[in-house]
Length: 135
Image 1: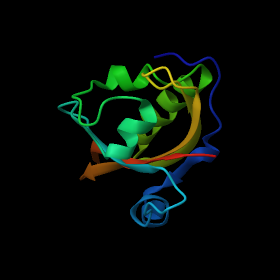
Image 2: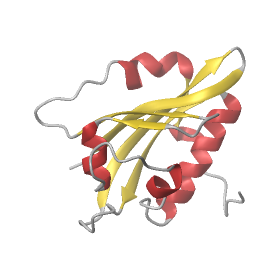
Image 3: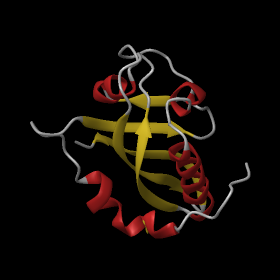
Image 4: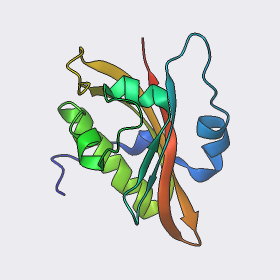
C-alpha cells in the first residue's frame, strides 16, 4: 500500500507503554468502548459487544477485516493503515483518533483507537487494543 505523505509517528509508542495505554483501560459509566483483537495469520477478529455497537454491526456477527476497514472515513483509513503497518513491522503500539461511518447508517463517529502487537520472539502474530467513543 502506498501512502501520500508519511504520517508523523508521534502516535506510535514503545511496547513498554502497553500497560498504561491498553492493559489498564477499563470501561466506565461515562465511556463507550471495548477491547478487540486480530490474529495476523488467520485474520480472525474478536470484538467486545460495545465495539460492534460503535461500528453499527449486529453483535457477534462474523466480520472480515475489510468490512471493518470500510467504516473508516477518508484520511482516517489511510492513517490507521499506515500506523498499523508500522506497528506490525517495528513491534510498536499506536494511538490514533479516527472517524468511522457505522455500517448501520448512523452519523459519523470519532473514536480513539489504541493498538499493540502481540509478539512471539521478534515477530508480531496478533494485534490487540481498545476502541473508545470520543464525545
